[in-house]
Image (cartoon, rainbow, N blue to C red; front, side, top):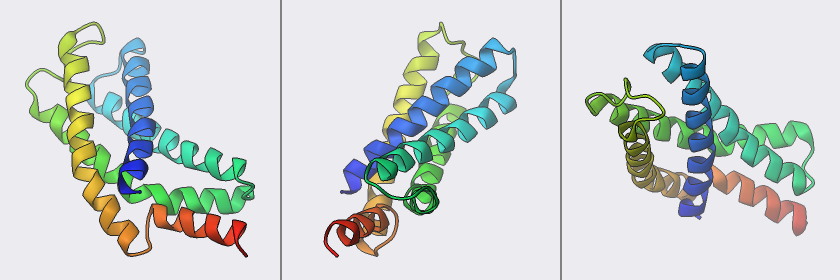
Length: 145
């Protein structure tokens, strides 16, 4: 369950980060704006994936929002800290453009490291009934009253 939850988080973070970098580059933004936009979009898409899954499962909008926030906030936060920290640590990675291999290799490596770090965090949270465990509890209650 922790690997699935982290893979789900990774997907939202990757979509948000790549879209953020593409838009920031297109708009001529510098590093701080680019990082900020990427983080905001990573949270948005991470939450959106869980929200959409909850809505498809028949959960009302208000509860779907609450579940997405409860399930994903810590996971996305850890992933973003590790991934962006990794990007900052690679010389030239933030200055690389979308056409540079360094940009894509750094982003992929940063997300891979973030995945490895975030799985145990999600495992710990799920073991305590937090994070994605909340989503599974809701599904159990919804399908087995």
